[in-house]
Image 1 (tube, rainbow, N blue to C red):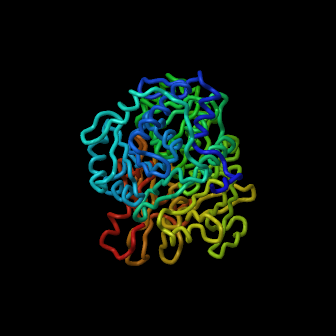
Image 2: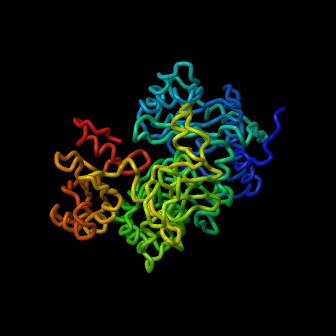
Image 3: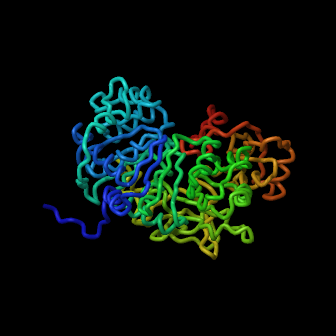
Length: 521
């Protein structure tokens, strides 16, 4: 028998069992009018563990799940951890082509599909892997109803068949620069991330956590920490501003997570003025940069509740945080930052030779942390490049000030080179959204015969607001100078977003670069 790693953490399954044992009578999960105590959640996890085992799922098996936010998805995530199987989430808004690529690339042997709205897509995904076992939550043609089988079983004691050093997840990146990459994480890295979240984010005394963005991605990172605190997770199938606000008021929600574009939607929605949101004590935001101007507006409306989370799939989304105490209207400069390293993470701003750049100069954000990925699945060259020199290279270009706040100037792939000068879109976007008429903005480079690339702004105006292109161009020029000033402004009703809610700059650039030689990233 191989010697166990005495320095490893516990498994993800053990995290669930800890919470169930500590808080059996507390309310753990609320979804679609169903409310589960911790004891009842443990019973459901047990039944789904048995149902999956009866279908042949065991240690080392590769399982994918395509589902909206629902209680069964949480139960199965825990069940797979107890079985020692590895999980790959499929984003509910992802394309069939991307999902087909993922199930083939990750060598998925079992696909679990939410029959409520995803059965057709699931069958199309299954066409790429004829030998794959297909299960469903609810009845669906051509699939075995896993929920029905679990419902017919009796709870039994939970037994952890996994090991902390086993692969727990292969999570795929968004694929905005090509095919998605599978990010491999062991149980140890995810358990470490839960502990980092407990100490690196601001949690209220009673955690009533609302998840409206997909739990397959960032919102899922709040669930195990909430359970460790004995709190309650409320699941919504998706983000609808009125439903979100109604749920805060009705359930006295204390913790939320949204991407910046969703916060902008709440701020501009008429229902906000008539909704009691006083219970909210922590609003986490992340996945994309937030306009400092709109952040100040949100702080005025919601209060001192905001905590920014910065990270990547490669570090389980736990990299840096801007704490509530850092959201100070009297000290507004840090509002443009992504905060400081979370406890347990070592962060440096490095140049291409892995030297730390002088304070205030731009370099690449690089991490060392216990929640860092093992590798990119079956991509040794890209793994070597990303983990070069013993650091995880994020591709985010940033500077650090004398207080340790890190300011992202942009993704390296988003940088615009115009007339030999480097322009970082994030800086221009912050100026555009500082204009009182602007709700959202995205800045891209477009082909230009003179400059190579020209700076273009795509702007969404606030309701009932008006401003013309000339005025916005002058607004940026006054703040940033001529090099960073957009040569043109395009007005749009909305910005395209990725499945994670980030402005989709690949889609924005594609319409301008489709006949050009430049590789659109």
